[in-house]
Image (cartoon, rainbow, N blue to C red):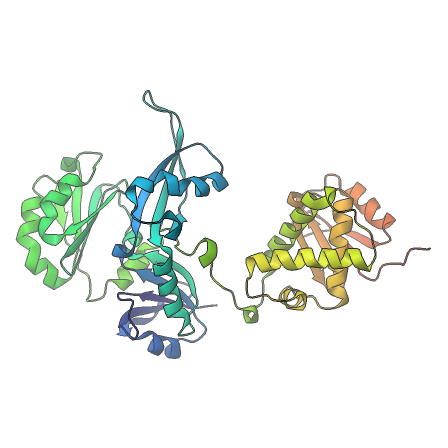
Length: 410
């Protein structure tokens, strides 16, 4: 199982020191947090999954209030909804979107969506990503470190670091200020329920606590209790432990979606997802193409398969690469694309498929239910496929098609 290397990046400078923590797939720490260069971590931890944390000052984290709309419209509307908060060209900004929450209608407004979003200069994010890639470290995810600090019911959470303070309310609102401005920052932080019913929990190193203890005690007079969880010199283990309960927004969206190495192969569920997407493309395009079962039509189908795979894997440059990624070569690829066309012609909707795969030279289709599969089976037999029908371990219907079809009589 793959280990994960968490990197806390601080400066966008070559050979700048970074903090790293290596964690096993079961969540146990393989190596304690250390400081080094990216070059050193790349040499020490080859082939691991990489997750990077960026300074909170790198981006703006906010919430956009939008009317009810589709996900596609949300992404298109965000730049204009946040325009007044942003300086410079909107096209130069990268918008990373979190999970939208429905907003109930009130007497003063209509129902809508509250969309958490992080806005960052596109060129700046590209520089961080390229800094990692230059060392052979492909980031699987990238978060602002501030967003890794989880909200806690019943407490206001504080994190002191190098003269700066992050405060997070039980509802998830956050304020960043100088540590010396703690009292004013607490006044700005929305708290519901009132502070008198809440605790104040300040995470800090022993040095930070000694420096700011009197300030915290004075500012926290309105809270029910104060606690000081002590952090080690590196906060990285604490931030990593928070990831499981926080809801950070992955910055790697859109053009920054992580690259995947073809050498790592592809699991069956990923294969199914890609091929169901291909089925959807074929289904949508059935009014445009009249499928003819000859070499020209097969080439069109293979091109559709290639386009679908490349949209998810930009490093794929040829049909043979796509087929190799999916475990198909030569006639296997041709059999699969032809089977997809015949499935579409038989009326198999993309959302009815649980799996489409090439196994032992045959095309195997697993359906989510047994509804209407008899008609699809008859259509495939009529298209000269040799069909075997059986049940999966969980009781669903599966059809296995012999890829060596009987040729049609002229």
